[in-house]
Amino acid sequence: MFRPLPTLQAARVAAAVLFAVTMWSLADSGVPARAADTIAKADVERDLALEVKLLSGDGVQPGQPVRLKIHLKNTSNERIYPVVRPGDGSEVGWREPHVFYTARIDTGDGNWQEVPKAPVARCGNFDAQWQNDVVELWPGKSIELKDWLAPPEMALEMQQAGRVRLCVHYRYRGGVTGKDPKTGKTFDTGKMRGMPAFELVSKPVEFEVLRPLDVVLSVKKPLKAKTKTRLSEILDVKLVNRSKGGIEVTAPTLSADARLSFETDGAAPTLSEQDQPYGKKRLLNPGDEAAILGDAPLANGVDGTWKCNKPGKVKLRAVYTASTWKPGAVIKSEWVEVEVAE
Image (cartoon, rainbow, N blue to C red; front, side, top):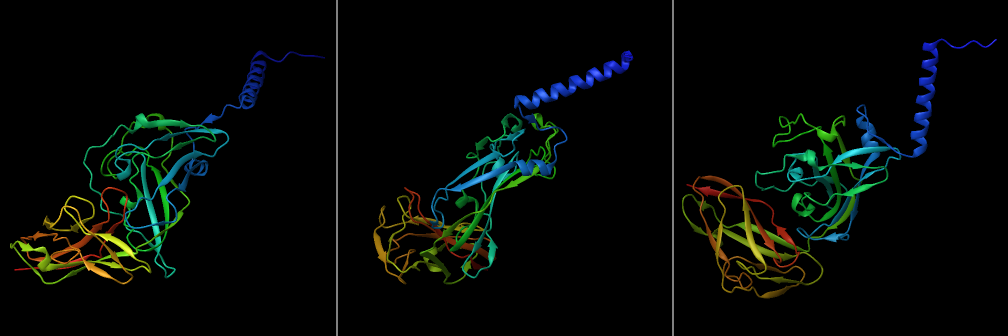
């Protein structure tokens, strides 16, 4: 004999049926779900990926452009993720996300060593409102990351010859805003609310760093403290052809094409003299070397002065820029120590 269900029980059954039908309808509609507040870090790092393609070819000289195409992709079939586009300050980690490179190099001995980061000099202003750069990344879709990533050749000290493996990193730290990541936090995560901190690392791209032309810096004598001294009396800078073929080089100038400069951890030398505004060219045969400071034939009379006020030791290296009008090699010597005597 049929008996009607009690009113409360009937209501519960009806609600359960309605819920099941609703969930079936949503699943059948093909509309993906948005990342829930309970999304796990492992899920994010499984579903999001950095895809990197090398565009500049296998061989580059130090300082030449390493061109990459970088995409942040949602590989999930069922979930929409909020992500933050890089902005002003992302390249140094002052805001979300922190985007940067790491690399290792094998110089020929089979031992992969970390490539050091290059010194960074930039103004202190940055865009702290990273919340404005949050976008939704739907399943299978990607966005290109091309802004506010320093070029690899400027971010990393890729001066040694060898095989390089370079990775791109995208790090979301849960809302960091400020120049000190330990204390710089924001409590307003905007559309990223509920998303855990996570880091994506691309598969490495490989290329060869070639150094057919070398810059060799040597110290002739100590520098006397508080005394302005002519650079060519203290330093010797040479270009050396380490390759098996001839290399055409250009004499340095103060403002035209090829340049000579110096990097130091103290007071910097000043270059202020030259013979001609445009440097002449010369073919260096394999093993040849040519001085590019002072009165040597290829030096173009480029010279200057240096003054350090405090006695001690100063680290210095020479930099030869092959061309300032087109992308060319920027070759740096090994660091040397210059004694500053009383």
